[in-house]
Image (tube, rainbow, N blue to C red; front, side, top):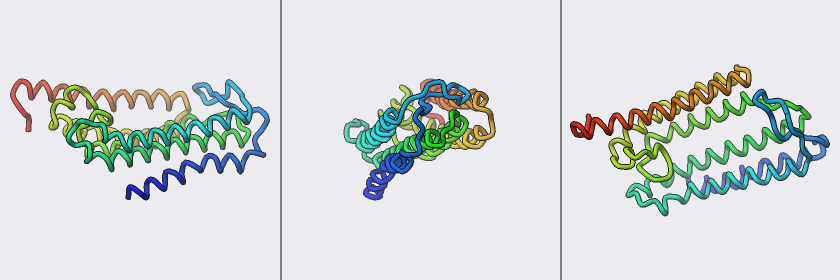
Length: 222
């Protein structure tokens, strides 16, 4: 499975470059390169600038993949090896998301539109968080991924319970955003997105701290 993921990464990472090559002659002279909160273009560039973006984003995602896939090697936590496969799958999800974003940028440029679908991007990020949430409950204590709080890193039981809760919240919240943001105007989708993101971080953090206080006062809580 690990070798298959490695091959898939190299194949997927080529998709934006191939897509750009196929649409290169269709690109207009001026390409929208930056968008405001409503998705309207507020800065234009040229083909070379788009090419730079298409090279940088996949390269960055490839760097993140190899970083996450090998970070267990320097993790002093005793569960580092157990996290190897999970971190690689999370890293693969990062690559898929970055490649999809790059392809969306190319599509927006090649279609000649001066508007970027912010709601679609936020929905995609929500789906990405749902995927991460699916892996959180099985993620073992480590210093690089997950809810790395002082209380979770100090106590394996705190880590387990916090990530069990966070996994459910991230999966449900991510799916909620993936569906809801598609049907909202860009500004409303962005407000909803950040409100949900704050809750997805805040609730597990408070839970972890409260569990730490309970353990400190009366021992482990069943």
